[in-house]
Amino acid sequence: QVQLIESGGGLVQAGDSLRLSCAASGRTFNSFIMGWFRQAPGKEREFVAAISKSGLITNYAESVQGRFTASRDNAKNTLYLQMNTLKPEDTAVYYCVAGSSLSRRANIYDYWGQGTQVLVSS
Image 1 (cartoon, helix red, strand yellow):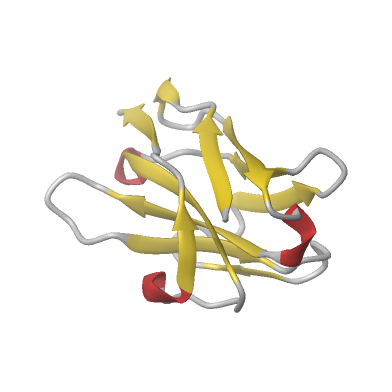
Image 2 (tube, one colour):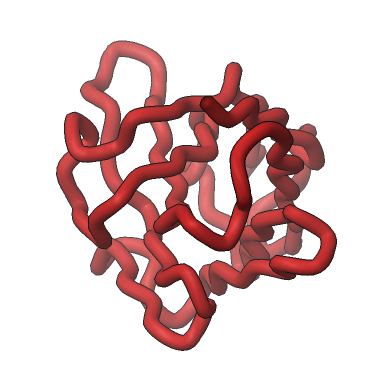
């Protein structure tokens, strides 16, 4: 079992940056593949990024490639998502996830945080 708590969301303007954090507790953090998903109002949940246990391998959705960077600090049991050049279409609730496979499929991830809201104004 692992508990995930996101933080760092908020209201920003287009072009701004924001960094999300996800603090994990419970089972050993570095035994999990970690990732981020998001869900905008009226839309399905979508994959954003995933990162391997070591942090050396990352995978991004095409819509955020080059703007977002996922990283992790296994010593601090924390996952990050650095979001640069934010766009209004990035507005969503962002969820931290943990699982055993580096995948873009939501049902692969066993553990989900409660989400943090990101609002990007134009």
